[in-house]
Structure formats: structure tokens, C-alpha cells
Image 1 (cartoon, rainbow, N blue to C red):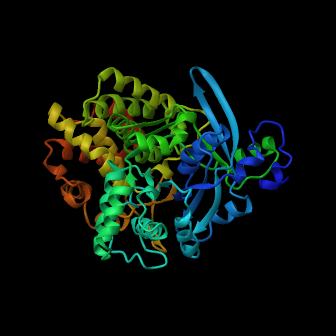
Image 2 (tube, one colour):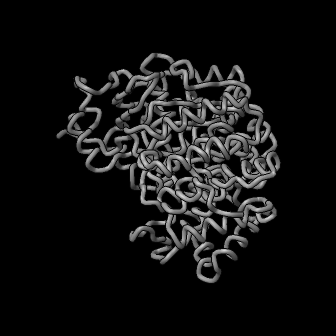
Image 3 (tube, rainbow, N blue to C red):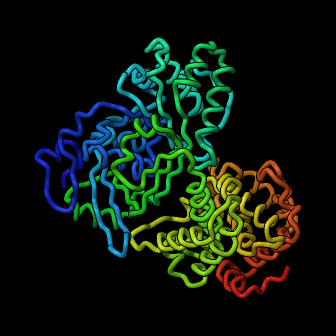
Length: 506
């Protein structure tokens, strides 16, 4: 079976795949992208490819990868091409599409090709920077931007912007539109503040700092598309047999698409790919989109992943096929998270969005694994769920039971049994699982020396974790403790069943 590459496209095969035309591979590089992950492939890169096919944006992407190896080699073997399998239901119609995306021109390693990356700064046609470096990528660290490369993503971006400033002698028309897609509130605002702080810490001159602030626009943005990535081996083999070629970067996604970007008329003009898909929205205020997505979709994911995994349901779809866990997720989303959103949301709009989320979770074509969702579990819980918990308490003066159970499941999930080569492993249902969280060692220490009740109180009281003393919320700690004890004694399934019947006294 042939391998996906540019040679496979000439002449373009026919069948169940939408292949790009040869002309698209000659488009100029207009975008610098930090990250190679599946979300970027399944949403921004796909949307740019879609716009290119319509003759709208007419630009390709240079991708920066932080390390050598991994998928960087696959991109090189496949000439930047990858297949996106789009599956789901839209307006009552089942959708099944396969698209070979050609928006990526090349992938460069920051570690070994930093000079080549900086050379892109002198490209006059470059107008856009996109990033997805996970929730922990946009952080201020002490960084020397003269290193090759700088340590952090903001440091790398600042070094690139300095190179562009110098290449065009401070020409303000050569500033860039920068769109981070990391799922943190006000991601653009936070990234811009870090860039300015690092510029001062690195002693950069006032003229550059003025150019940085006035010539460039760093936009808050929100992405919403479930992109579980590469399918399991059996599904991959079946799809490749259908496609007629092998693809190391084969990526699956749902149909639903949202990329909301906060920007003015200039941003709208530069990001002309907005015209290619109704799911791309550029407007001055995107807070409503952010709150609904962050609190209802991502919040439900975060507060359900530990519980569903401990219940022996490895994927979101399997959880939605389980009556009890599906009921828990429904009640959590509509009963606890929706009323707790710290933003003015019309109840009908929230209910409609929530039901869309549950329908998306039921998508039979998506294999979204809870273990993948559990990455950076603590950071996600703090960013996505704690503000909802606090607002729920202020608004209703009550304990959100389903949130308490989700928090208890998080604590149980973080109980490590052993450590190997810096990775902590927990155990559930007779199998080990990796705890992919920067606080894994912290929890391993707590579980080794504390009983569940004391551990719970210690964690809830830790303001460094949550930004607040959650122990101060009346009744919440007691509810979490009861659920945690049930999880340890009876297991996840029995605990969920009893929670649905409100058998846990507080």
C-alpha cells in the first residue's frame, strides 16, 4: 500500500478522499504555528486548508516543534500532508468525510533548526502566528531570548518578533496578528503581558517595545472541536484500506467547529480564512463563547474523566452508553455547571448549548479517551471548574453534589501506586495508568502519609493549587470526603449509582 506524500497526489486519486490540487503546494508561507498537536491539525490547519481550496486565504503554515523526533519525522516523510477524518451528525444528517490537508508547508525543530525559524521572520508575506502549547505553555519564566532556542514558548515568540523587527527596521506595517488557542481565559491578553515583561527583563530597547505593543495584535481566542487524534490500530487499518494509502498522521475529528477570535476590522481582514467556514467568528467580544465552551464542555470533561475512567469506561462514547455515568454527566452539566457559570448567560441559550454538548459526546465515530483528557488534570480543574464552584456557592448557597463527586474522583485518580523513570502510575480495575500531571508527585506524597479525610481537607485548603481556600465552602469538603470514601470502599460504579439517588448525606 502506498504512503501518503506529494507523489501520491500526482495524478490525484479518486475515491472517498478529497485531495488538494497541486497549485496549493505552491502557496506562500503566511502563518507561523507553534505546535504540531491534533487540535491544531483538526481545527486551525484544516480551516486554513479549506480557505485555500476556496481561493480565499492563499497561504501555508510553517510549524515549529519544540523537540526533535516524533511526528516531525512523519511530517517530513509525508511532505506535510495528513488526512482528517470528519465524522458525526449535523442537522440530522450523518457526516463522513476524508480530507487530505495541505496547509502545512514544513515542520521545523526549535531544538535543531532555530536559525531556520528565525529566518522566517524576514518573510514579508508572513502575517499570522498561531499557537497551542497546552494550558501550561503560556507562563512567565526567566528566559534568555538570545539562547538557541529560548526555553519557553513566549520566549521563542519574543525572539522571533525581535528578529522580524530588525529585518524590517521597525516597519509597523510588518507587525503580526497573533492568535493563541491555548484553553485559558484571555489567552491573548496573558500572552501579550508575558511578552512585554520578558522584553523588559531581557533589556530590549524602548523602540522595539513600542513596536511590539503597537504594530502587533495578540488576540484572545477560543477553539471548540473534539479532535481525539489517531484512531486505534484496528480502526486505522480499516480506514487506510478504505483510503488506499497509509498515513502516519491520520487524525479524526467531529463535525462541530468553533474558532472564536477577538479582533477588530484589521484582524478580520488579515484572518480572511474566516470567510471559508461559519464556525470561524471574528468579533470584538467572545466571552459568551468562551464561558459556554470552557465551563460546559471542558468542565464536564474535566469533572467526569476520573470518574468514568475509574468506572472502567475508557472513552467518552462508552461513558455516554452507560446509563448511570451518562446521567451523572447530564446532571453535572445542566444541574451544577450551567447555574454556576460566572457570566451572564441566557438560560435557554445555555440549555441549548448544553444539549449540543451531550449530543457531541454521543458521537459514535469519536474515540475520545478519558486518559487523554486527564492530562494536566489539576491545571484544568483549577482553570475550568473552580470559578464555577465558587460562583455556584455564592449564587445558591448550596453544595453542588455532582461537582463534589467529580472532585472526589479526581483525588482517587491521583492516588499513585508506583513511580518509574519520573512517571507516576495509579491502578484501577486491575490495570495501571499513567498520571500525566505536574502535581503527581505532590499527591503521591499525600496518599502515602494521610488518610482520605485529612488528605481531602489538605488539598482543598491548598490555595497554591486553586487560588482559593475551598475548605471554606460550607459542606463541600464533607461531601467530597464522603464520596471519596465511597469510591475507595465500593468503587466508582456503586458510588455513581448512589449519588444519582442522593444517598450520600452531608
